[in-house]
Image 1 (cartoon, rainbow over the protein chains, first blue to last red):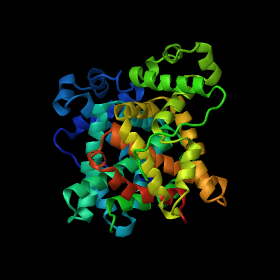
Image 2: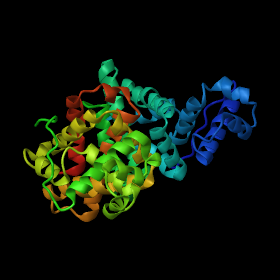
Image 3: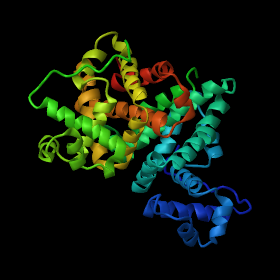
Image 4: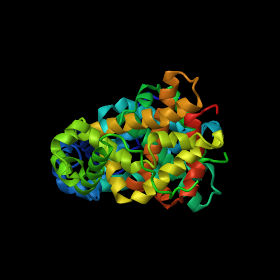
Length: 204
Length: 204
């Protein structure tokens, strides 16, 4: 699998173009000004849309930020991620997930670090991102590959998977832990991949 | 092993009492006012010492914060941690480490969450904490149990262990990921313990 492949675009949907322009403008503005200083009005200006449209599509700055983080930090749409990681050997799901995330994160550099910092500092961002990760990404993967697991068990699994990936992002881009910063993506896939596998599919 | 045992005090050393009072005052002030608003002068006042003494013992606010975080987040002094986790079955080192950390963290509540947030937002704090964790805690454990591992390999192992524990702290106390918040300490020891074991002693 190539980690450097471009991000496939979603197919067109009504309003998708305007909505996508707003998310992209938000990503730029949050990376430039930080969460607190960025405004919905400023984002609307960068996107070239009426501020009312921002409110039409997004339930506040936190929701918009969460989606901008997600747009910046995920290689594909959630469904595409699920489609890709569930294809191929089941025992290598963890490696495929770690490799896909690292490829995108490493390519973002400092802008991604700024977003991870906001995840820790801003409660509404944290809630948005974690719900998205738990429900749309790890939850879908776990449910698809292990449909018989109970709800509480699934919640624990996806929570631990999210915790591992948040820790990896914090260590590699924000706190800059030397052993994790120096490691190649391949080394991290080798060591963290089986861990993620064990969290998401403990018996698989 | 009891996770709720009180924190053993270090033996007396010259200046230890003054230094310890400053760290305790710093812990209170950082928890009350946050990192940015807390001042070395205010910390000196709470400790009842001359501000010059704070500068004598600590190389700036970041260094003092790192030590205050550490004092709050570790069950014992580094050497005591090493002494304890290396005793007992080698294959359960990871469980003992996770259990010891969780016991202390869970008891701290919101004050600990505030400190984890500062770890993500303040670079000098991040550097101080990660150097401490890597060198004094996981580095000592790894070197003690596997003295033949090379320096680069050890750095990667302790970095990944630190990343896992930072992710667990972020998920349980700051981002509040439901599956991780709901889990009992025993459940987390059961699932995260073997992961930490694999990071620190991959062949052990």
